[in-house]
Image 1: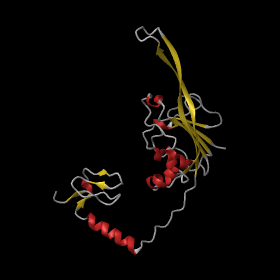
Image 2: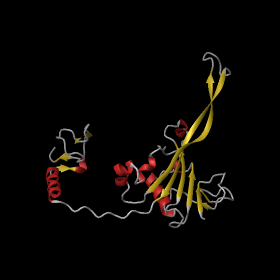
Image 3: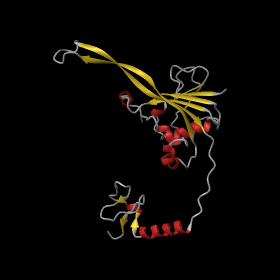
Image 4: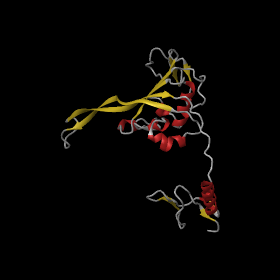
Length: 241
């Protein structure tokens, strides 16, 4: 069984191929900067991958590195991630953290989740690389000792210590096989007419010069000085204005 650990650090997990950004120890099998795509592994090379406290440090968009995980992992293979939680104050202390994560962040890539149907299926349809969120839980990341001053008018020697726990988010994802592409729907006479009508109303506007539009309570878009357009239809600056 071929298993990969990204960002193994100084405490590598036994039984894995160990990766890190530099070869700082004899246990590092592969040294590679994960910002550089593609990663130096073949398609479907690994049966399991773990990355603990790693991916939040990358400048890459989440969809970019998640697609690379999908590429090098076998179908139905598990991907274990540990990432900083959005509601953990310590997540913002590390200046190398590029982003924090929510409990439902990866629901956008899971076809069984509502966030996928509402948003993710459109956001990431070009890659068509989907996942199953098998499990998500919180785990203790660290415990900070915080001084609590007992007498505000006295020096710091008059204090007690309070131990506060900080939590990270732990995810277990499984790679899904690519879903077959659905054929585009056959246009009906009514939809063709609606498209033609929308195109006529759009004439005389320059979409490249959008200015001052905002979202109304019911979803319409209204630019400055121009009547409201249809829901989801962005109107630009009119010729001659």
